[in-house]
Amino acid sequence: MKGSLLLVEDDPEIARVVRDTLRRENYHVTWSTSGLEGWEDFLKQSYDLVLVDLMLPEMDGFDLCKNIRWKSDVPILIISARKEDEVKVKGLHLGADDYLTKPFSLAELKARVESLLRRWRRYKGQPAPENKTEYMGGLTLYWDRQKAELDGSEIALTAKEFDLLSVLAQHPETVFSKSELYRHVWQQADAAGLHTVTVHIKSLREKLADPVKNPRFIQTVWGKGYRFIGEPL
Image (tube, rainbow, N blue to C red; front, side, top):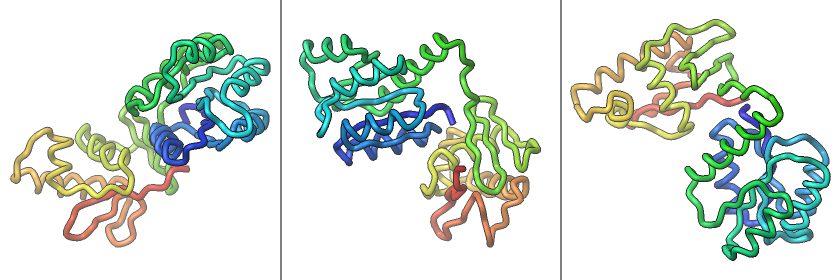
């Protein structure tokens, strides 16, 4: 995991989008639905970053930020629909490290989270954790190093095989047609490339010891394409 995050947000639709987005980025995310619940969750364990909405039931985001800052110097990112400068200044004065105004893009959210964590770890003298995902069945993917292991042993994947596996694994349960996979991995729209995809999928399955009839990682959706079904640990 890249880090443990606490998300305090009472809007379930926003919270689920933020939580699922950050989980796909390999963060562990705890979701609290009120300021008081967020404070109780914060006291239960250690977090690398806290994301706080301001308009919260039971305890508002300002009081939560103040309480957290009394207890810890963990980075705090306020995410709020409040756009007034005085509100932003108040939040920052109470100890927040950054302020993100709703609505925001998920790309900006991910960038701000990464930036805050990078600065926090530099301040603490901590090395950044390795960017990897472990799955049931013994598969580990090292995203930055473009390396894969099965049961602790490195799998000799070609660059295209790793790219193909990455596209599937980074979009779990999404069905990709052969044409879509060819466009994503080979950056070409060529019907002649569909056989190339088939050959690479077959090779991946052999190297992952992943049988077609009882797959653990790559599943064929007949008449449609392929999807990744590996379960993260």
